[in-house]
Each structure stands twice: as structure tokens, then as C-alpha cells.
Image (cartoon, rainbow, N blue to C red):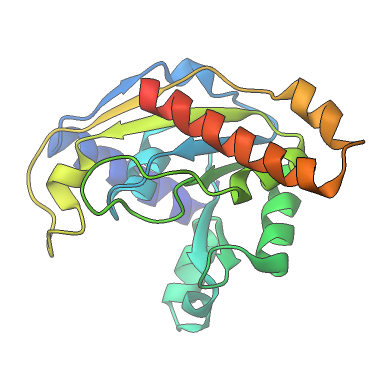
Length: 207
């Protein structure tokens, strides 16, 4: 962790616990070392800092590549371990950057839904996280955030009051699907990506 990251993490914890009385459950499921994908539902702009302040290790986040070109902001988000991705949240360069972080033993936060919910309900998962799981070999830790939509969902211009809960699930490994992915045809491979994505969302929904 850089000092910038440590300070941002401390401020996030201070705000989430002091203002939103955040409860964090089962954080011990997150491995302290080695590559891991943290897969969370996405309801609010508060979600990334909330997770970053709740877990016991540095987390890499996705950020739109154009933000890195803005003076000061670009420097700041680099210090927060941001990964540049294009507008759609992926692309070849974005995927390579994500995989590079994972292959170097980092933890990275991904939102399987791809975007924030409009109504507070979980959205279907996109297949991109399944591709990342297969390509990286990293375990997936599902996370469910409660209360962030009510406090600062798309329907609110500014954050309001509320109470947050961060519930962490047990790691998912997908060993059998990874083995099958090595030899199957392209159609089945695409189905595997979506199957993994759907399974992750199911686990998130159960938390």
C-alpha cells in the first residue's frame, strides 16, 4: 500500500463506520496474500471505497482510462491502485491490465453486473468476469453490499444517511470448469464464461 492508499483507506473506514455504522461480516474469507477476485453487487458510487475500507488488504479498482489523463486526479487514482479500462469496462488492453495485476498476486474488485443497479435489485451478470476467472486462475470471493443503494443510488444526486452492511462469502474456485475450458470448443467456452458469471451472482444474492 502507498501512503496515499493508506490514508484513503483510513478515511473510508472513518466515514463508513462513523456515519453509516458499517457492519462487516466474514471478512476472514478474503485471503491476505495471493491473487483474488472480489466480486460484488454494484448499487452506488460508494461501493468501491466501502469495500476498500472494509477488507484487510490493498484492493485494485477499475477506472475509466480517460480519468488518468486529468491532472492530479490521474496521479491520485494511480496511487489508489486503479486499473485503466475503456468506457465499456473491458477491451483487450483492459483485460490485459486486470490479468497482469492478478498474475502479480493482487486483489482486484470487479462488479459482475457491469454497472450500477437502477432500482436496487441485482442485475444479471455479464460474461466478462467469467473470462477473467478462466484466464487468471484466481479464486473469486463474492461480496454483498447492503444499504448503499438507499443511501446513494442513481436516484440520489448527493449521498444521504443510512446503514451499510458488507457480507463476504466463501471463495469459489471453479476447478472443474477451468479444466473443461482447456479442451472445449468456442461455443462451450462462451457458455462456461456465462455459467461462471451466473454462479457468482447467485452466491452474491445468497449473502
